[in-house]
Length: 138
Image 1 (cartoon, rainbow, N blue to C red):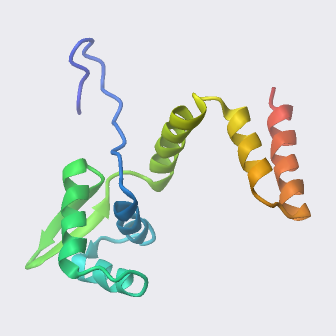
Image 2: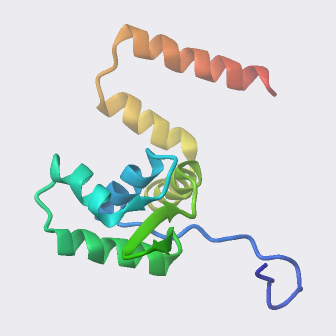
Image 3: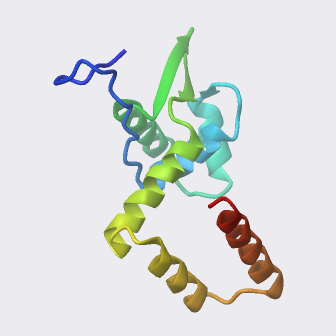
């Protein structure tokens, strides 16, 4: 367990900053419930990205160093698995985005996206339901 240096209280694990390319790797790993060999990750990404295997292995190593992925060795294979949950990473990235672009204010961000992007009547009703539920919690 990691402890806060000052108080001796257990430290809250930090969510690593993940680049866009690293997100693609993480999405492949998160989609599976078992550790994946680099070969499997390379094959999965070959369908959508023109990355060389060496590029993917470099990204895997970066994610291990950042603490986003772990691995275990089985014979001559390295099997990679997520150390952070997708929901935790989305939450951290969302908070970072909100702080950087909207000074942490949620209402202007929502207004921006609603104003700038076309919404179908079904999407509008869905958003209204979400807001109604949120209002009911108060």
